[in-house]
Amino acid sequence: MSILNQYVNYFQKSSAVIGSEEYYGDKILLRSILIQMHTFPKHLDTINALRAYPKDSAEQKKFKNTKVPCFTISGYFEKDGKGSRTAIDLIYHTCLIGLDLDPKNPHADLKALKQQVKREPFVAYVGDSCRGEGIFVIVHVADPEKHKWYFDFFKRWLEQNGCKGTFDEQTKNVNRLRYVAPDSNHCLNDNTIPLPFTEVKQPQRPSLVFKHQPARNYSGNTLQGKIDFAAKILDKQGMYFEDKNKHNYIFNLCCLLNKMGITQDEAEAYISTLIPLNEIKSNCLDYPYKTYSNEFNVWDFKNENASGNSFVIQKFPAPKKEIVQSFSVPQVVVDNIATPKVITPPLFVQTKPEIKSTEWDEQIAELQSFFSTASLPVEAVKLNDHSTITNLPLFIQSHLTIIKANNGKRTFEPYLTRLKQLRDYLGSSPIKQTA
Image (spheres, rainbow, N blue to C red):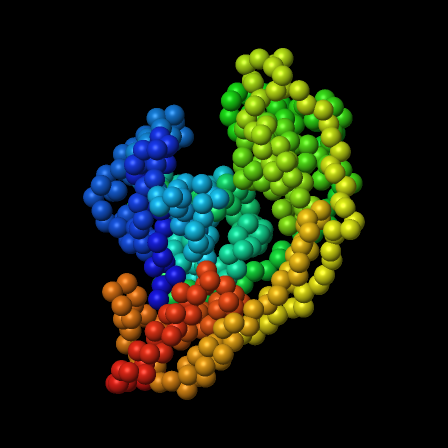
């Protein structure tokens, strides 16, 4: 079964009034919308109209936000029986990640990159962006719990392939919306092999000291404008992003951004441009948003003397030694693919070692034994109305890899179920021709 045959959220437009039908959207199979957007007349007409506007014009941006349909990639979101656009309402992760590659680097050959990406076994979809200038990629990952950490790998992979500076950091958000984008030269792969998580080892870098750099003036009620303004406040109070002070700087920056109405996801996207998120070994990102949630968006930009605009540099709370717990997890090998050691858990938060479940061990062993000797048909196998398997060996290999790595996790039970369905199908159907 294709990894793309999962339900996601579909919205008529990205900008909608909370409480309206358009805000809640509909439920749709991801594979269906990826096919429909290349053939449905309404989608074709809408994108042609979008691309007719001058590049990056206010008219083009407004049309994109109010007229172009969009959908989620990484999960299905629901609250109180209705679709949702909020990350905390995630029902399940699809094991898919969307990447936006934009032509920011004039030396990057995106056309050549598009052809190269198509050949990667973990890539489920490649096509043009809605404006026709960039590339959109859907990647099948083995460990969705490492959603944001995968992006360090993709960023390095792009740099090694001559496309430094093409990656859009905002795509890290799990609830990121993707616009429909017709592309006659798109590629859809139903037989992906999930990409194991690999922690990217960052090279040793010189000390980062952002002292005496001219702080940019506040440039309006925009995301970048608020970030510049927050950095200017810290600069005035002698707070710099430098060695031995990075976590304290990030903590105070997040306190300010929280007051200015910038969400944690947006803050993380910016901070990842200063330091890879997997190098942050504390909860200096989470702490301000959880502790001071009642101060979110209280900053008054029109009245600089407003009471909510006061800010004094704080020292990031030291960890409580009695609740810090260190542990190591041995390296695990899944089908001869070594997965990296688990990242050290954040400080200041009481954690417990993850106990690997053995709930599915007997079922996995039985399935492995069956498929190791089963005769596999050459022709495609249709399990049901929504599931057609075109490459049985790849299907079996990828599904076994996933359930071994996520033994007992209910989110991944559909992979176990599909393997059982295939076993029952092969056990009851005569095999005309074997591979």
